[in-house]
Amino acid sequence: MSEPNGPVINFRDATPADLPAIVDLLADDEMGARRETTARPLDPAYALAFRDIAWDPNNLLVVAAGGDDQILGGLQLTFIPGLARMGAMRGQIEGVRIARSHRNAGLGARMFEWAIAACRKRGCGLVQLTSDWRREGAHRFYEKLGFEPSHVGYKLTLRRAQ
Image (cartoon, rainbow, N blue to C red; front, side, top):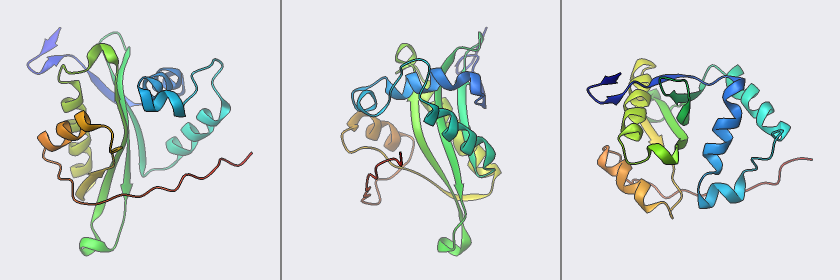
């Protein structure tokens, strides 16, 4: 069964059972492969992070599931209240991944349509994201969706507490 925009995709909150598939998606590129570990059983840090995200009403961990409930993509959406822009709520999109078998087939655009609609529903005045400067293809994709490269971002990596 298909919709006009492609196969039926269910955008839903991730469950603990989805965690291995999400971690696999995060690790399925050159940069992610260096940052993530897909060894089974999963490192307990993933379950702790999942718990914290699920507990926080300003965070959503969302998966795009096919008709057979296979996880085809995912993202994290964080709603950030702020004073800037006259108290505008911001939607922060992070950790966007699409299964290799479904890349360049429109699923990413559909995920962003869903995420932007969720931001509107929550009253956000701005949707933002960060992207590693090496992801040039992703940058072209984001600009095609209407995002503008408006800021320079900086990160400071901290070692995880042992």
